[in-house]
Image (tube, rainbow, N blue to C red; front, side, top):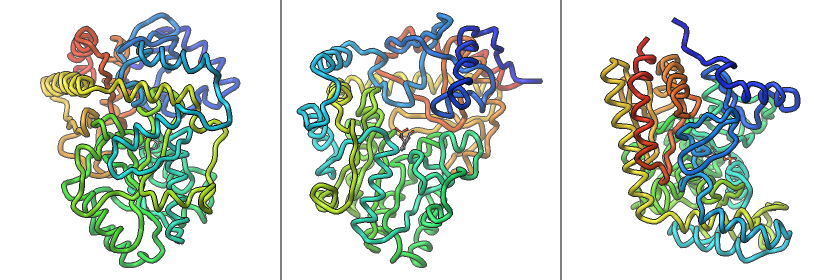
Length: 440
Ligand code: PLP
């Protein structure tokens, strides 16, 4: 039976916008996972968001379980963030000089994540990981980078091999346009596999500048590090003089006030040398950061020889949004994220079980994802071994009932503290029909 993909007539205004967009924007979207290619149907063009709700161009409302892929931890158009942004914008949008808001945002990050002594603000998670890699290469004088299959670190040439997120969604082996030389300096290993890392270091340890890992993988669906994995990464990198880059773009300030580090650290074997952040720290605006050990960060221009820059870096409006968002992340916010995510996940599990649909739910803090398979997922190979067509049917049933899930089986679901009981109940009410659709 074909999946009940909604047709353009279910979302005529979005379909019309997609047609217009496709004339002037490749594929009609500015980031591939938005295109619904993995699930089929018409991507919804959103007109507005408020708290846990999105309203599309046709005026249909959805409970949002994407939350802009992480940033909207307080919900859409949160009044405190809106006030901070409005106040900052009234004073000017960008100066191209230093300004106080960026100092305050940097101070807030450094205060939260203990091993981070200094940060440099950038505009996207991709810039953060790209710059961290350059810095690690500059610091060590080595070129090779190790990454793990299924981890996504943005669309940096050297880090696209076997990446998660859209690369997983579209089953792309790698991207065209990445020079062989660049890919040749990347070693891709299975996630959660320390013996594979030991073997790579035994062979090429003197060439390896850094190991980069998602603090907890969220881009092949949620796959937390196995007990001891992060300790092992620290032990092995330190033994060989390589740096460990902990990518907390997705987990940072979401899994806890100090990110996944706050849940798993501090570590007996020391701390990651560099961290990358994005998403929550920008509150929905384009700002991100990389930071860590002061002696490593000291190598950045203008102090040191590793060049890194940005016209809009530390933008005062984006910094104000990020600061207001971080300051809004009170203990009550984290409690609410836990309550909401568990209420939804428990109901998903119950309904999928009732409909005899194989599933596994995995967690990193309040981030969770639903794998349409039996058994734990600890690697990208495991994650790929699931029934993506069951997900597709489930997704479209939820969408038709006004719940917007990430349009891919390889993504985390994100909730916000603004998801009130009405929003949660709306999601739960949609689940029985979606579970039956997944079963067919
Ligand atoms: N690193 C991780 C762990 C991410 O999840 C992402 C984006 O999803 C990135 C890096 C790239 O961030 P951006 O999309 O802001 O470039």
